[in-house]
Length: 429
Image 1 (tube, helix red, strand yellow):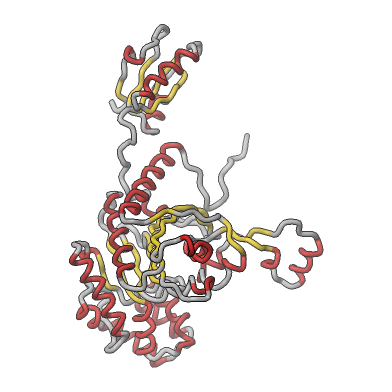
Image 2 (cartoon, rainbow, N blue to C red):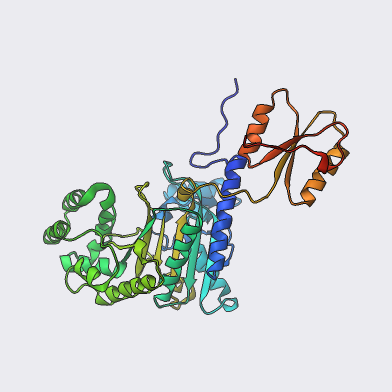
């Protein structure tokens, strides 16, 4: 008995119907982003090892798949083992997100790009994740980024384009949580955490959705964080709302300790005012506890949430410091990514791309020339056509055809030469 053959753990095959659905959804996403003025680019699946491990990717750097150098010999392998440093064997790595490659792309091609560059990247990325529901080792990201715009226009455009894309996909019930890293740092300072404690405290606060306020406080106490600061945070949890319904300046300020990062409060309120004017602000929520794990965020951050999922369906934020690492000068940047693998199962099947999708069922002995002539006639009138050899039991064949998006079939007679003589029967009956 043959043993089962499966793809590598955390990676998947897609049957034709699944692949067709994914491509139709990606077509909707591409069309929506293009309508909002974004241009699609493509970058290599690999980047230099040093670039992927330069501190720009946060915890994702630990999940990178490394590519070994060519021509390694026993001496090189032994030297790496003696130094307990396997990384010295790699010079490339598979990209773990699309933001680091975009930063490198912009630094490479800046002279050929507009002053404010609006980019789309839709492509697979790889992470050595522990596979689980909604989390894979190979998955598609759908990113839009605006580089060169320092003002809130970038955030407004990204949020508007993302919401329009979710709407075009027919994905209902989504909302976007929004915060600012400057507010988070200001809050930690107001509570009394030292600057050295900030990274670890933010990692713990980022678990709030999973462990709740009590779990966060218990973990911080177990880490011996500044006791007075921990108690101040506990009191804040007890008395402050986790989220506010809108982005009015008074609402944001009321949810924060007094005097925290007033310039960030004003910017968030301005984003809210602009989106209210555009009629889309009702799906936005200010969340002072939203962290986003990527260390490169410098300002506004946001996440898509859906009531059917405990995890986000996408997110992003402002990362003004990243591109400067490549260029030697600061360039403002902001981006938003839709988690394609997490939304594909939530969306309804789009309508087939063809008005007609026909299966021609023929006998084994049918003349190939005649079959191809019939097929060409139907294709010429805009139909999608597949030839299928007749089986004793037609039901499984027709069921597979219907699952693949075909809408009708016809039995090809021995003398049929004109497609107009075919008797088309619906596959939906």
